[in-house]
Length: 60
Image (cartoon, rainbow, N blue to C red; front, top):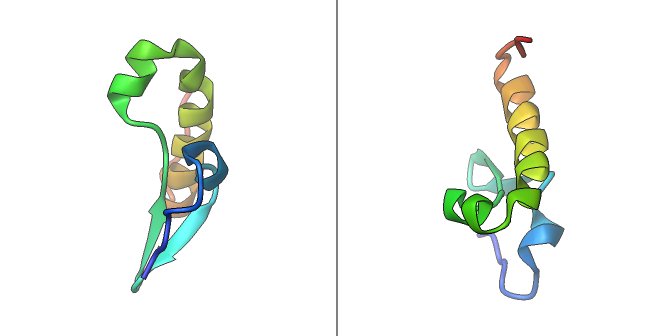
């Protein structure tokens, strides 16, 4: 089981975590991006890692 109580969101994002047989990428909630636009770049970095893991090519 993934235990997240003693960590801040910024400490958990950016790497994959194991949850049972699944890989989990923690990132910021979309509403947080509206409140804090500076989170957009870290979320995009997270999404690029997810896309790479899934074998989805990055366009543009």
